[in-house]
Image (tube, rainbow, N blue to C red; front, top):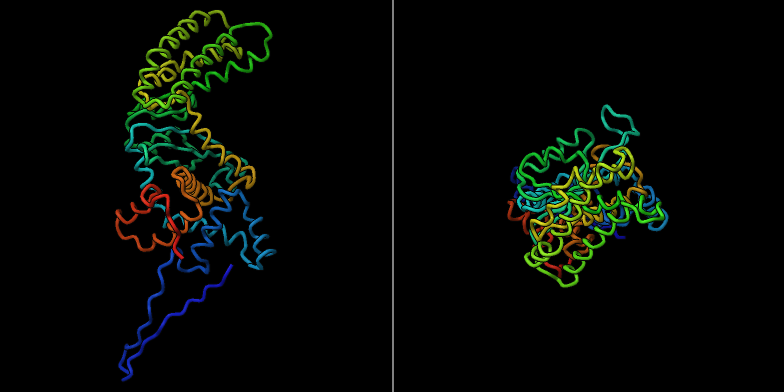
Length: 373
C-alpha cells in the first residue's frame, strides 16, 4: 500500500492581471471525489467477487494488516458508484449477446434485504446469460425481483435465434417471440436418476438412463475428435437423431402406464412436454445438448453468495451483477481480472466515443496486456 500525493501547479500573471491565475487540471479519475486509486478500487472489486471476501473481512484485513481505515460502508458505496462509468462496457457486451443467434440463460436466487415493498427474507433472482460470436463470447449477470417472465422477455428484445434454457416458466414469453427454445437434456436425465438409484431391478428409470448414457457418449465422441459445428451436426444426424426418435417412441408407449403424479410420471411427462426443445440441439452443430455450461457459470456466484449471504440494497445487487459479468468475461478471454479492471478504470475517463469503449472490451486488448503504472 502507498499514499499518492497529488500536486497541481498554479500559474499567475506576473503583472497582476485580473483572472490571470490558472490551475493545472486534475488528472481524470473514474471516481474523482474519492481518495482511492484505480488499483485500490480494482483490488476491492476482485477481492469481493472473485476471491469471495465479504466486505467486513476486507475491512478487518485492511485495518489489522495495513493500518488502513476503510469501512465496509465506504467500500460498498464505491463498488456501487463504479456502476455508472462501467455501464457502457456492460451495454456493449450485452449487444454482442443480443446480436448473435445462439445464447443461453439460467437463474439462481439472491436475497436482497431492502427491496421496496418486499419482506427482507423474500428471494429475488440473478440471471446468468451467455452469448456472443466465437472469439467475442460474453458472460453477463442481471438482477430481478418480480415479473420474471417479462424481465427475461425484455432483456432479450432484439434477439433472434436459439436460446438454451431449462424448463422453468420464466422463459415462456421469450419462447413465443423470435427465440427457438433449446431445452436441457441434463434436466430431463436428472429426473430419472434418483428413481433409478432407489430401485434395485431394471425398471423404466434405468432404461431411460441407458438412452441418455448413449446420447452423451455421442457428444463425448464429438468433443474428443474436436469436430467442427458442421461435423458435429452430421454426427448427430447419423447417431443422435435415430436414438432420440427411439426414445420418444418408447416414452409415448410407457406414458399411459405410469401414475401422473408419481416421480416417474413427472419425469416421463417432462420429456413429453418439452420434447420439441429437447430435440432442438439436433438442428445446429453450434448448439449444446444441455445448459450445463451456463450452470457452471452460475456456480461461482453461488459460492460467493455462501460467503456474503445477501445484498443490502437493490443497488448493491445490481452492482454485484455488473462486476461479476465483467470479471467472468475477462477470465473467459484469458485476462487477469485485477489487471483488466485497472485498465478499465484508468482508461474509461478518457473515453468520448463508442469506438473508445470498444477498444476496452476483453478481446480487443490482447492477452499480453501490461497494466499502466
